[in-house]
Length: 291
Image (cartoon, rainbow, N blue to C red; front, side, top):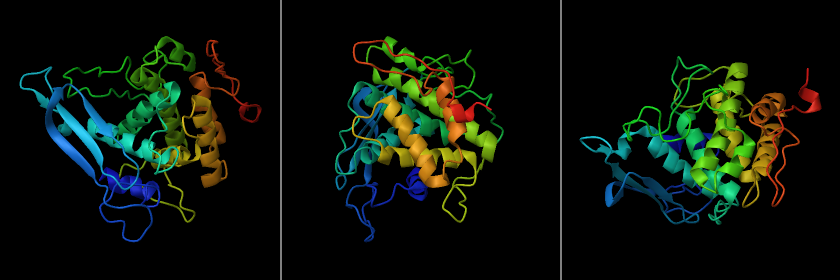
């Protein structure tokens, strides 16, 4: 189902998706995702290998040993979606023939963040609100708070992550990814509050191909932005790609809602990342969004 959802949002054959038969729609076929369930090569982990378009992706799902009996990671939707989304971000960033564009400090971290974001957005329930917090991998690890430092939350008390926290992460991609996914979670709820939330499995589109609700609209903007950003993107470049993706899709109708999500987590217009200098947060909105 996640393959089909991503297809409706734009991860098609021409974009480098994972399919045996591309039905003459562009791209290279013969590249389904091969999933190894209960893989015996290790434990307490899962990972995804993304070769260029035309070669199968490989999802390796290990057993988790923190509970008795052990738990199979293929039974936790968030883990499967997280891993599959690595294939999405790797195929779209830099183009489907170049799947090595997310190996830098910030780009590698965002790779983990995009995966956490999609794993969270897809799991939203009908009664969820912006006060709802979401952990990652809680069931498979037998640990309700999940495996990240904080659950994803719009509360700065529950999850205080800001942009400059990258300096504290020692280059660890999952930790850096928490910051990026925290930004995207803010944006998700900003757009849901503006456009509502479709609790179905697939989006409805208006006559211009724009999802009519905030949940799927956020996913669409984030997905489109991956294809716009450069190889090895930094946070500020991925931010620009999201603003540009919304402008291309909606004419910039969500400009201030997007910036509000960025600014809340320290990624306002003047947030800086200079070589050999600490990252500097900016919690301000652009001038056009101050009213």
